[in-house]
Length: 65
Image (cartoon, rainbow, N blue to C red; front, side, top):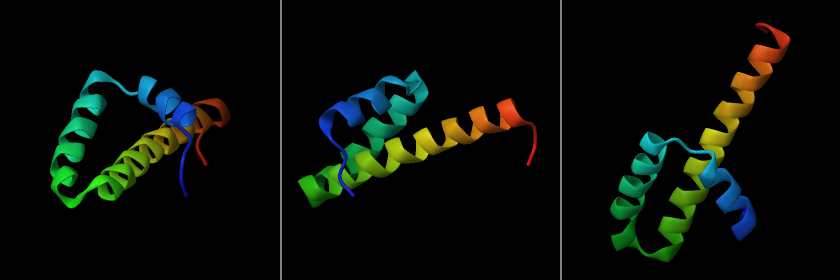
């Protein structure tokens, strides 16, 4: 799965400062493995945070499941 630049930017903008710092650290660790590894880290981390956000919103809107 590959995200478009607009999708990545939208997800990135929703991150807190701490989450952005975590992302930067993960990208620095992945950098020696090449661009594909960095893209995978970027997509995985952003999708993970987006999923957490959706689950929190769903939990708050609909009560506990």
